[in-house]
Length: 122
Image (tube, one colour):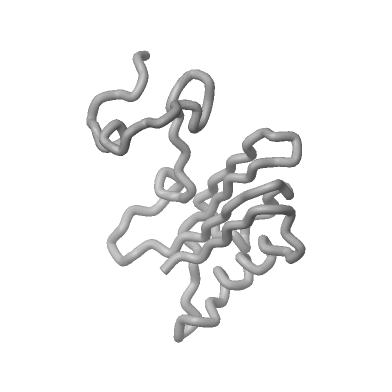
């Protein structure tokens, strides 16, 4: 099970520190289990832009710190046995829905996301 946080509104706690601690020494898993198979975040910043980052490093070994924002999420991955590792598999994933940016395609149907056809012409 991976570790993550999601927030809306400026957080009053140091959520990044909490994620680093929980990922390095999971208090809910026996035997010193770690969530060190990559991490990342997406933050809607104070100026309205999207800050997005992913790393194949363990979150506690990466000096990068997410910016504060109006809303955000961060994820520390613990890959299941036999699952691939690396940056390509670190969360969160980002989808470009149009040339205008992330999520700008209104009322996109679920079938559009499940289709093997490209969402926009190249």
